[in-house]
Structures are given as structure tokens and as C-alpha cells.
Amino acid sequence: MGLRVILPVLWLLPLACSTSRSTNREPLVFKKDGHALRQMKLEEIETLQQATTVAVREPHEQRRMTFKSVKLPPLLDIAYGTRWRSADQLLFICLDGYQQPIPVTDIVTKTPYLAYAKTGAQSFSVHDPAKDKDVKLGPYYLVWGKASRPSEELMGAYWPYQVSQIDLIDFASLYPRTLPPQNASASAQRGFKAFSQRCIACHTINGQGGGVSIELNYPVSVVELFKPEWLAKWIRNPRAIRYNTAMPPLPAQDDQQTLEDIVAYLGAMSGAKQAPDGAPHTSQHRRLPPEGKAQRASERRRVGGS
Ligand code: HEC
Image (cartoon, rainbow, N blue to C red; front, top):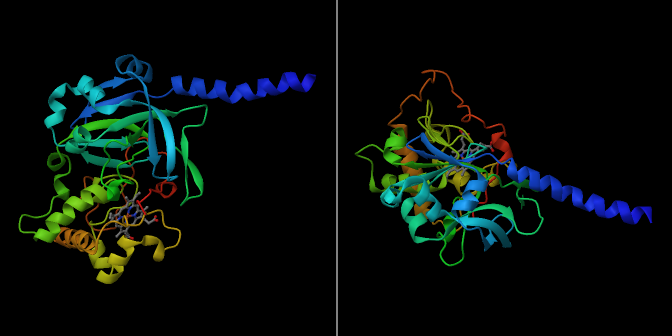
């Protein structure tokens, strides 16, 4: 008799906790070129935009999942007015330092949703098979509806989790020190594009980019550190070289040309070194993650789509 009374109460406890957590969620910050324009609490987002349940094939667990979410484009219309639709890129800034730029054309032509809960009472996290660990997805997780998704090779990179800020940026003005030199080869130019989609979320070049991992160009470029064949092997599949590295493999769909282009870009940048802000000019410099990045870089592992 006594047990029957206690058990249902215990079952209710986790539910009560998760509800209070969702109301404590930090507001989503909308920025333009690094400057905060407005922030929205989840309660406000839910009054502005009707919540929908979206079913997706989740790339970490590689299975179908359903999330409570709102469509992203109408929310951006409210935050920025319709001018964002003709802008360059949206930068998704995450609590752990991941900063993924996504071209506005992808946001406009495909079907992105901002997810903020899993349907049912399940915790808002996914299991990362590479780490054998659950990772938190909140405050927001960018997911893509079935109707139209990014190309397969970008499936991993384009699903940023722990999104706390969205910045409407012009890539060339936000990250000018990452641009290849004018005289760079066509391969290096293509490599720059590939790098900006696949690598810059975690790495910096001349101090500009994401804060999950280390600088690749300053003061000593990785093309100077690694023999070319080992650099290519590392980028293709880092775990074949360091079994426990936190860096994901290049998406399996990427061909040899993409790999060579990325190496060509890194080579071109080795001839265009610029000191990151505040970096010492001689000794090795390790960039600190942007503010509020409590989690260690090594705790982050991304799905690479393979
Ligand atoms: C999810 C984050 C992430 C992404 C995306 C990523 N890396 Fe890394 N990378 C790391 C981490 C973390 C390390 C450091 C090794 C470690 O701690 O496991 C690293 C190390 C490296 C190194 C070795 C640097 C050195 O000096 O030892 C190179 C080169 C590199 N990455 C290149 C790339 C390239 C090129 C891409 C894109 C194709 C890329 N990375 C994408 C996280 C990432």
C-alpha cells in the first residue's frame, strides 16, 4: 500500500524538474555583425511562432526523433525584418564554442527548425556514439525537416546544438583574416569555401573562427608542422592517427578533390599569416574559447556524417 503511493510520486519528480528547467532557459540572442539586436525568451518565441512537432532523422543517433520546435525563417523575419533573406550568412553560436556559419540561401531554400525539447518527457539530449556519452542539446538545436535538407556531407556540421546566439553576418567582414590571398589558386579558393563549411566552426585561422579547438595557421601553419600526406590523412580520418581525438572525420561523401582543396587553402594561408588580436608575435599561442565556454574543447565531438 505504502509503495503504491510513493512510486507515482517518484515518477513525477523528473517531470517537475524538466519543466522548471525549460522556463529557466536563457534567452536566445539575435545579433547583427556581432552586436546584439534583441533577445527572446522561449515563452515569447512560443507566443510569436506556433510550436510544431518535427520528425527528423537525427544524425548523432542516426534514427528518427521528434522535437518540439518552431520554424526558423519566420522567427528571423520577426528578429531582423525580411532584410536577412538577402544577407550573406547566419552564424550559429553555441555554448561550447562551436560557431557554425550557414549560408542564408540554405536557410531560405531548405526547412530549418529551432528545436527546444524532445516530444514526450525525454530529456533534451542525444547520445554521441563516438564519445559514448549523452550531450545536452539546449538551449536550442538546429534541425532540418525532411522536405528539404542540406546536402548529406554537411549533415553533421549543419546540426549545431547548444545554440544560444544567432548572428547575421557578412563572412568577409567578420572573418577577413581567413580569406585566401588574391593570387591563391582556384583549388585554394574552393578549399576556403569547404573550410568555412566544415572546419571553421571549431578552428581559427589567424585568430578568427570558432573556439572549440586550436588555431591552424599562426604562428606556425599546420602545413609546416605536418608532412602533406599525414596532414591529408589527419583531415580525412583523425582517429586513424590519434585514436581518441575529439576531431570528427571528414564526411565520407567528400571526395579526394575536396580534401586537396582544403590542404591547398591551408597552404595558401601559410603565406598570409596575421597575428590574432592580442597574440604574442613569437611564442605559440593558444586561443581561449569565447566567453561563457565552460565546457572543454575535448568534450565536444561532432558527427561528421560518416
Ligand atoms: C568538432 C570540432 C572540429 C571540427 C569540425 C574540425 N576539427 Fe580539427 N581539430 C579538432 C580538435 C579538438 C583538434 C585537436 C586534437 C584533439 O584535441 O583531439 C583538432 C586538430 C586539428 C589539426 C591538428 C592541429 C595541430 O596543430 O595539432 C588539424 C590540422 C585540423 N584539426 C584540421 C581540421 C580541418 C582541416 C577541419 C575541417 C575539414 C577540421 N579540423 C574540423 C576539432 C575539430
